[in-house]
Image 1 (cartoon, rainbow, N blue to C red):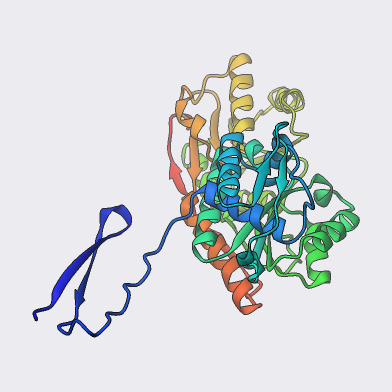
Image 2 (image 1 turned 180 degrees about the vertical axis):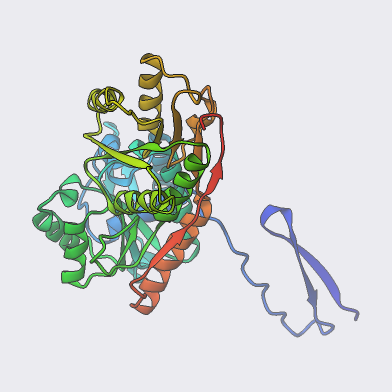
Length: 385
């Protein structure tokens, strides 16, 4: 009997062609399972199941508002996940819409997957859009590799004295790896002392040896300085938040390197603000009152770029004729300004992939070289230089 070919529909309507053997009494090997991309709903279902297995909630789930905050997902995503758990016998819904946890299915006795924890000082929905995209891609990549993820928001862990908050968080949430966003030196040193696997999404303090992934801010600002110097600017201002992270420190170093290469009369003034528009504007006013005020501004953080530009224009400065502005960072709204802001843009998908690779290697091998992975962004000239 001749062989028969059977076509199986796969992901994105692709086909898998399997040839059945000539002999009918010989069983063909089953086709390999096709890889699947887990949706955010599926990941939320997975997170809820693991929490129920671990006994995080004993009799009832908390309300939707609390669950949304805990899992960092929207209410429609949460409700879809809850409906899935109810369909598969994990939950009962009472007449008061309270969700009671049923006896766990037998399948729940299997060992849970490794969990990778993400730690941030602010909720996901308050992150800048580029970083929200990074977190979404990270979740997808890690889920494809078989890892559960959990997003923790704890401002106390990012304080000057984070030991108590970090001790409690790590004790209650054992994880294969910790991915921390925007960490500072006290937190980084705590992870080293505790010998907990950690990858920093950002830059470490100069004396801290943890694996990290970040933009190459030194090279970025050195390039920005060169752009401004070639345009004839000799009095530059660097606008940074007072609460400086590792990337802000090397930003100043890179810009000073660019000015040093001129071997001339180029000057740099660093304006460190407290993150509020009034304080930033007051510092700009002080700089503009100088006998030789800055004629070019390199600004960190996209929202502060907008505040600086509007205040300069309010003071009668034409951009770029009287004052040039470059944003060290990118944000989609900068494409809609007039004039369009000159800025540096990183490939966020590449950033997320490098973070995912580092986290997986650390989880699977237990080791990862304590070196910095630095990605060079692309300069978008815009109209403000």
